[in-house]
Length: 372
Image 1 (cartoon, rainbow, N blue to C red):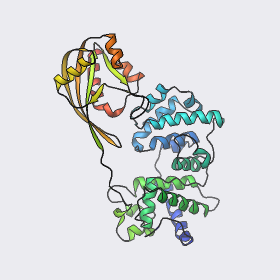
Image 2: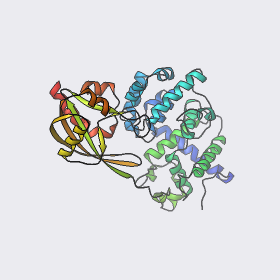
Image 3: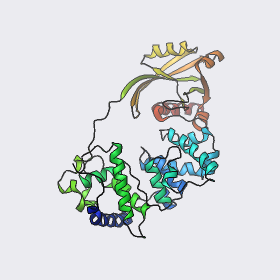
Image 4: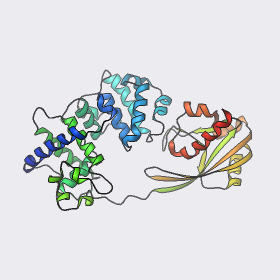
């Protein structure tokens, strides 16, 4: 079985591939805001945002985040509501919580400057081998690989390696391979450009879905998968575990010009975020009214808001939503249910809401017109 592991016989071919790759990158590099000023903080922030998120979705968030928290000290000083609100809609909120924890450590233990070495960077919360390699190489010029799924896909195709790229040992071998390749280069070698070239190649040419654009690839002459016409056979993909499906009922409870929100627990899915009241199971309009009355609210009108679906990495929510008009608020009902009623303006600007309920936020936005 072909291996990703580096051997001396690869020297000549990889020297040429590296040259081809860097020449290609010089002409085809994507113009991205964090590349125009690649400070350690900018590289770090962008790489964390880009985890499991498309570049196009990240760019606006990146600019907005930096406009409020322009450096590590500002991030370390930010309160939870502030940095969560800036992250609202990006998902995977543990990423920004780890950013904040790491910023506090950097301020307290590293005089406010991110460590220069991959080993030290990996000691910080939320920074794994890939992110540490990206920061070390792009921001500090260190000869460290940054191996993610894109890079593993490229290497699997070039080497015609049929192993599962999700196996840790495959990634470890790939990191050793690229570290060896980097160490072969002369003093003019730009490790950051090399890593970013691989990132761009995987994102724009050696595509994960559908047929890769081999005619535009600077490595095609060396690619074993391309030579045999089996590009799409690599990398090997194991069948994904089927997601668990949860049926949920979502309640948009309205009292005058205010709407109910609820803070989720500090641990677990969407930890610490605010949400619309919801519960397991699907009910009809009468059932939604009964659920609200069981919570202690006196309900007048009930309106069906439609069905929506949200996909998490391991679970799918299939939601049915109802808009309910509360005739009367009782303090004990609010306390027992753990809800608070806020205006649309306050909900929008003061609370972090997960995108799982975005379908129903649109309904909320339409109601805003009535109170403008």
